[in-house]
Image 1 (cartoon, helix red, strand yellow):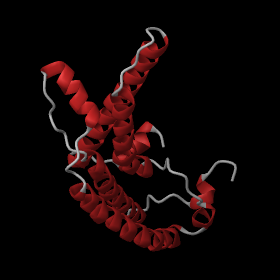
Image 2 (image 1 turned 180 degrees about the vertical axis):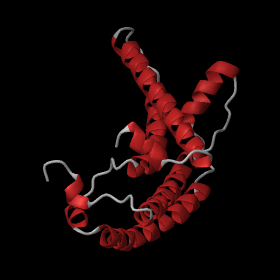
Image 3 (image 1 turned 90 degrees about the vertical axis):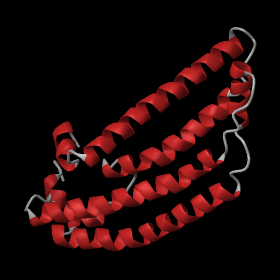
Image 4 (image 1 turned 90 degrees about the horizontal axis):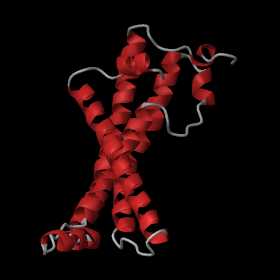
Amino acid sequence: MDVNEESAAWPSGLLGWYVKVIRFLAGISMLAVVSIMIAQVIARYVFNASFIWAEEICRYLLIWQTFLFIGMAYHRGELVAVDVVPLMLRPHARLVLKAIVTIPILVFLCLMTINGYDYATRFGGQIVPAVDFIAMSLIGHGVGLSVFWVYVSVAVGSALLALHMIAAIVIEARDLRAGRADTGLDSIPGA
């Protein structure tokens, strides 16, 4: 999907703002992971010391990245999919098949959202040790950041992915009504 197609698929307003925030968070979180890991490698192999908190912080950032950005990856068509059969169908039949396939996935994502939140609230009494270690060295006391904020990423990511899946079907149906649907295999060069 090129930039023009992507901007057409994402309306301005609230959704446009959402996309900008998600992209910003993706960039900042990846910059943080790469910076922390580079600092960790330099500290370990050059100074023969290491940051005991680096691995844990990067792990939590990667967990959030996975769940927060999977919806965007789905919308952009960047998730692995076997789409030979759907591409052989006419646009209306493809939309019906997509809706039928999406229903059990949405049920699963709903269960993930509910159970992910339940798990986060059950075990949210624990603290994130790495954050407390950093806070102790900077301000003299721990901040007591709950692992709830790590575990709730499952619920947030599942809910966002469900919204992206619903939006994809709505957008495809809208485009089909307006006569802008792609024509399946005919629209793929060399197919």
